[in-house]
Structures are given as C-alpha cells and as structure tokens.
Image 1: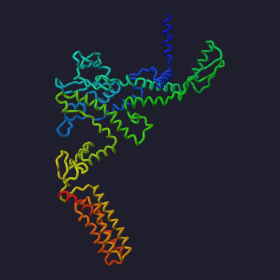
Image 2: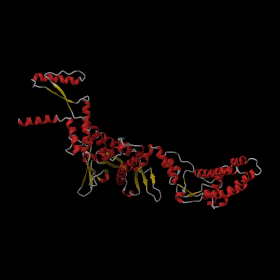
Image 3: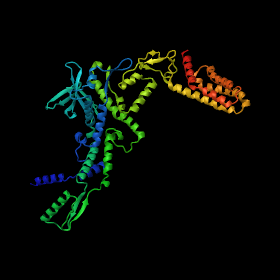
Image 4: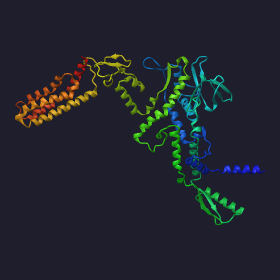
Length: 534
C-alpha cells in the first residue's frame, strides 16, 4: 500500500514538472554546463528546432540541386560522358520512386542528422552494372564485421525481415566519426544539450503565449478556507482566466500576486538566438547569413561568407560523396578511368553578375573559348567560336595570326586586310594620340601671340615634340622614323598654312580641325602587326 502511494505521488510530481522548470533547467545548463535538459532530443525531435531544420534543409537542397557529372580520364582534357550507365543512374533515375533531386536530398538529410547515409545497390542481372540505388533509413541498417573481417550490412525491410548485404551491395557514405567506418550523429553526440536548451526555450515561449501572455498568479488569504470556500474561490478564478477582461471578485481578504520569471532576467531572446547560432555555425558550419542570422551581415562581407559556404560547408560533403560513389558505382576495371564530380559552378547560376564576370575573365585569360562559355549557358555554338587566343600576358608576344583553337592546334584568324586589333588597345592608342594632338594645339596657339618669332618657335617646338611622340608611342613601332613622320607632317602643314596668313590663330585652328587621331592610331597598330609578322 505504501509503495503504491509513493508511486502515485511520484507521478503527480512528474506531471507538475512545468515548462518553467524546464526553462530553468535550460538556463542552468547554458550558464554552468550542468545537468542535461529533460526534453528528449533525437534526430526526429531535433527537426522541430528551427536552426536544425534550416541547416539540414539548406545543405541538403544545395547539394541535391547540383548536377553530378561523369568524366573519363584521357591523355588530354577529361571528357564528360553522357552515355555511361552511372551517368544515366545519377542524372535521370537513381530509383524509380525518386528524382535525382529528391534522391540526393534524402541521402544528405540522413547524413546530416544520423551521420551516415545508405543506398542499397541493385544490378542488371548478373552484370556489375548498377541500375538502382535505393536509399535506406540509417536506423534500418546496421554495419558489422563478419568472421572473415569484411564489412557487412544487416538491413531490416518494411515487412520486418532482415537481410545481410556485403560491401559491394551498399553505397555507404559515413560522416565524421572515430573508427572510419560508421559516422557519428551530430544530434546525439555533439548537439544534444544545445538543441535541448533551444527546444525548452521554444516550448516556454509557446506556453507563455498560449496563456495569453499572462504570468502565473498566486492568491493569498489570511485564514484557512473550508472546502466550500476553497471550491468557490477556485471556480471563480478559473472562470475569470477564461474571460480575462472581466473583473475578479476575491473573498475572505484574498490578495492577488503575480509569480513568474521576468523574461529579461532569463535572457530569453539572447538564449534562443545563441542556441540557434550555436547549432548552425558550430554544428553544421553554416555562415550566419545563410542560416538566417543577419545581425552582422554587411554588403562587404556577404560575398566572403558565400565563398566560405562553398569552400568549408559544401566542399567536404561533395568530396565524401564523390569518393564513395567512385568506389561503389563503377566496376573495378573502370575505377580510375571514370569518376563522378559535383558541378559546384552551378551554385553561381542564380548570381548572373558573378557568373558573367567569371566567363569574361576566362575568355580574356585565354583558357576558355566562346563556344565553351555558350555551352555553359545552354546556347548554340557560333561559327569561329572554338578559337582560343593566346594572351600576351601569358604566352608573350606572338605573331599577329598565331592563335590556338580549342583542340590546341594553331589556326590563322588574321590575314591581309583582316588583321585582328584588340578594340581596347585601339581605344588606348587613340586616346594617347589625341592627347599629343591637344598638346600641339595649345602650344601652337601660344606661339601665335608672337608673329615675328612664330616660324622659328614652331621649328624649335617640333624638335622637342618629336621626342615626346617617340617616347609615348615607342612600343607600337620598331622604327622611330614612322613615329617621327607624324610630328613632321603636322609641322609642315602648320608652316604651309600660316605662311602669309593675316590671322595665325585662324590658320592654326583650321589645321587642328583636320587632325583625326583614329586613323593615325589604326595605321600605327596595323604597322605594328606587320612588323611582328616580319
């Protein structure tokens, strides 16, 4: 009898374990690293915590949305293979019940939560060609060592039966662990208390607002009430709580007092934010802005955090999966010849400016052709788009007609009357020549103020100006005579036009108006190509 009474009292005490006590327990765990939170935490309950859900979803969707390509190693450039059975499996139908996106999403979610992901492999008859990769829940698979020392997998199906598969029948990707065979659950082994604190805080907030945001109350009476008075008071309080805007009448000198923990003292908002960032940043290695914490996000650091996300968050997951698929999906004879690779460049698909800047740099550097760039944008190839130029910054000065095609063979794209002039170089040369012409005009107009000394002053000016022209444009010609001819032509024109002129300023202006920098620049550039060809 005594034992039954004690059990009943214990159950009553457990039922009285309020959300407030759980919040206090969470605060103690947070501040002093004390006992574990009483809220159970596992892979399923952890997904109710927003930081865990967001982290798993972001990583899984990002990874599953990227294409997985199959390449064949060759002596030159590795070639993407479209017709290989593994390519068809990964890009079109890994399993009849899954699209590639859903297949990858499920596997990565298992990996983030349980530390392992399993896919049972089915083969085409007696051949080693994989035709299906069926995801299996991690809690239905048990890896173990056989008596022969090899790794096997005990799989429980939906009907309750148990099958044993060898290593060749399972695509197993382990996460971080200590034995190198089975990964450890981040939820159970590393983030249990952290997630428990966050769940306790969420539960407390929900309970607080379910109570209309009212704190708990205590009613004090000076004297002990009999059963009838106690029941009347209790009934009245309960009715008033259901109708919060009606007045409450207290009898027997009762006084109403509030009893609750002030939210500011509990640091509720700070605790909830800290737990979320702890899970996202330290547990799943997500940059704060990716997980939705934008307090410290600035325009000047978002780009660097995006690079961090691709390099430190996603890249380890890519490599784990690639290495395991290369080992499990290809025949032993094909290993090393074929390999799979996640196309991480697809992450930039939504950022058109960054993507186009990358294409521009690749074209200017000379390691991509126009047709290669067009193929990345699903555009048709264009005629002549397979030509790969040889930038002077990398290859040094080359012949004017010496370019490389996409296959590495030299090809001629410039001929007589069809020289290829970089428009940026033409614009720079034209601007330089235009500046020299402006200098001439300014100096000649100053000399026109002294008509008696004008012709001697013009001769002396052009003797100096010829050297300046050769200094500014010397890189465009091996011969200084061609550069000196530019200044000499202008000197002769000025002397002829001003001879016997009554108004020197008007005569000089007529000459200046005839000077056009563009033809001079084009002539110099064409001559420079001819000199290189010689």
